Amino acid sequence: MKATAKAHTNIALIKYWGKRNEELILPTNSSLSITLDLFYTETTVEFDERLTTDIFYLNGEEKGTDETAKVSRFLNHVRKLTGDTRFAIVSSQNHVPTAAGFASSASGYAALAAASSKALGLELDGKELSKLARRGSGSACRSIYGGFVEWKKGVKEDGCDSYAVPILDQKAWNLSILSVMIESKQKKILSREGMKRTVQTSPFYDGWLKATEQELRIAKKAIEKRDFEMLGETLEKNAFKMHATTLGADPPFFYWQPATLEIIDCVQHLRSQGLLAYVTIDAGPNVKVICQPDDERKVFQTLNEIDSVKEIFVCHPGPGISYL
Ligand code: PMV
Image 1 (cartoon, protein in one colour):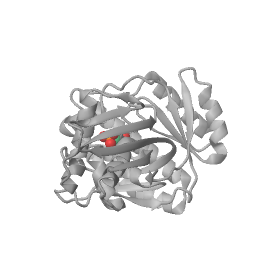
Image 2 (spheres, protein in one colour):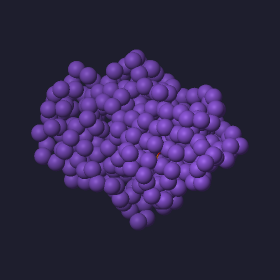
Image 3 (cartoon, rainbow, N blue to C red):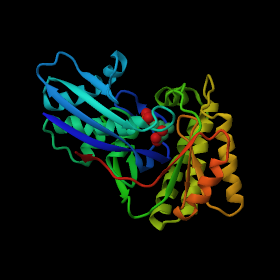
Image 4 (tube, helix red, strand yellow):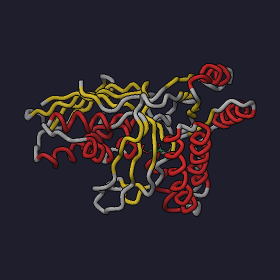
């Protein structure tokens, strides 16, 4: 009754931003991501009838009530699927810089979904696993697959048609994703809270929904044609629109820091020199710069000269879920 799974994190090129159902984690729009090779979570889950509560270790350290409660809430979904009532020891190793716009929740819940369902003897296919991971964190449903992945928002109220599908294998198109770290402090407004406030109060939210549907279509076409410029332009516009909705929220908020803008400026400058590089930003101040592998070195060197850049992680498309 023990299983270990490994899941990689992903970066959205077309963002998931807003829920239509908070409880079931159903999104208002479909999204598209690349699973990353460098960042991952390995999780072991062991159910044991002698336990009187769930226990959660993160990077070897036993976590307190709040974090363990989140894991327990997730395990309840798996327990419900099987009718098993036993508690579990969950032990996760996170190879992701946590909570700074690097989505550790994506790899975390994807690995937890895979390990816990396997430990209880469930043989879930990709679709069912994706739906289960989604209950932990929306973006986690995309980490079930490697390469380029689309999360279809679905329209059903019970969420049965809201899951991720693979659209292009990790080996089919190599791109470079430079994760530029400017700040490693805990982010102030978690994505869950940020998107909720935006949906409820931002007059720009309707514009986001309209645009993002169109941008998703363009991004998919660009992936199909391996048209990097078309993909890059689309993903950058999409990220800026997502962040624009937060400025219209009440109270308004934003995730950017001065260094975020410095990096955007630097990438735009590279582009004015003919080098194709584009930025995307999640619910935090760090920036991911996407370019073609031939330009990776030049982009790395240029970004590395910015004083406020602490570290740059160079990623490429990575694999989906695996069991260890
Ligand atoms: O899955 P969550 O709740 O961590 O939300 C992710 C939200 C963004 O990272 C901003 C966008 C995305 O699609 O990953």
